[in-house]
Image (cartoon, rainbow over all chains, first blue to last red; front, side, top):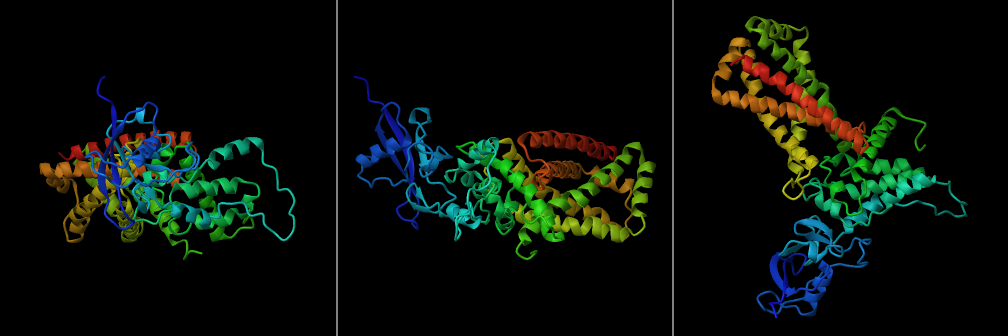
Length: 255
Length: 203
């Protein structure tokens, strides 16, 4: 029998939110068709590092395992992506895993993505329909517009665009491309458009739209292929018009 | 309204001032410099005409110095809040993003020195003419400094035109942004020819 093939990992670990990160190497037996998550599960089954020392199992986030929930994002060989669709057979070894650096680390590869959910609340990324009585059906949306909007709705809040953006960092308060594109989505919805100006005002505030420096890394990195930079440029046009309306006054506040 | 939109206002003002008036002034300056290719007398006449414009102090303060100062200082703030990552994301636009910040800082150093060497010296009694530039560019180190400075200023302007078009929502779709990329590339090449021909006319 020939020597057994193995897979090598170098994983950036961190024991608590405040402790210093360190690298640990792992070597596991090769199986065909593995993804990074199945490899992490293999390590978890027998948490022994490459030196043969017993260690703690690695912590990471996961949920859907089919690239729609966004929870398992991490830096894999330097690029942020979902570990569920990162196939070991397609990766250069040793495979380097690290938590996304834009978000606070909870433990090992698990990060706290709350800032994105907070941003969604800030920009009111929903269609408000609650009232004291039944408002009836909303206006219809043209089918072709629905198909276009569906692409924007694919956002899974995975954080890859924020990780790739040079203007999202600890020195800046930029909210990043993800909530901006959601503003475009909900402003395009016939009912959502009734609060169009509120969302625009929010992203024209601190840390908003104007912080985009057009490096366009986001659109190159988005695993869902969302046209983030087109959304941002379209919002730039909207914001220009909104700032004129604010300054000169307008009787077209919403429509 | 303006109070809670301050950042938005400053960013848009920064973008606007870079083109109008600072960028337009730079183009005008390069064009006047180009008279040097026609000889000493032509250049001195053109430069003398610019210096003898009516209300020249008002023009200088409001069209050049104040907008330039705001653009430079706020631009430094923007440049140093970015965390460049071209190593990991080597895409064309990310390179342009990085080069825009680098060329901005180089241009600021160059302009500060250039203003000191010409405008400030003029205020102290020196005469700004063909002879002066000939003496400055006689030094090979200064010649290289001027070439790098002028090229980075032109690059910063041309690429800044692209981001101006995106930031104001003029170029929205990927195709329109692509077309503006080509247009601004042309601006860069054309102005570089104008700028370099003027520099080498003094050598």
